[in-house]
Length: 189
Image 1 (cartoon, rainbow, N blue to C red):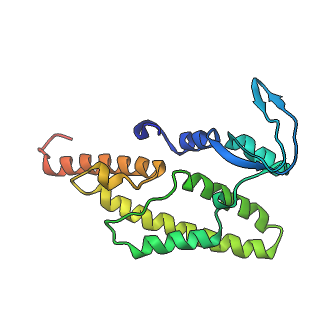
Image 2 (tube, rainbow, N blue to C red; image 1 turned 120 degrees about the horizontal axis):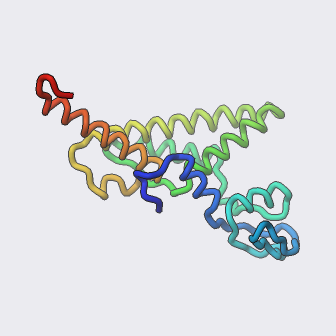
């Protein structure tokens, strides 16, 4: 896991693109060399671990597919939304570390597909609503956690890297603001 204080969402997304993911070969495919990187060979039906960005390109070509459990869908998002709403503000459920990168890709994919078919437009609108609700719910909890004077690993253990980044920024901002309010002396800033 990267040191959260020195990263941003773009860095985290780059890291996600370069993580190994499981895929299953849809058909036989020969070994391919790409600028010092070897991909394959693949045998139909076998599972492999490859970088996400390579898996995405191979999936577009129908060579491999991701396991069904790795895909987000409205039902999974609804379940996540329900869990977030059912918890108090001091509780935050654990999400998979790759939840937000997968969510971004899912929303972008649906946005592109929604211009082609009305069914995808409805799914896109549903997913966008669920996604915003999840993000807003978790953000409210993170703000509450960040403003707490006691910060422990136990409090932040269920946060994703993106959420830890937000939590750290808010905690630092709130801590500085509190100090300025409580330690203010005339003429100093």
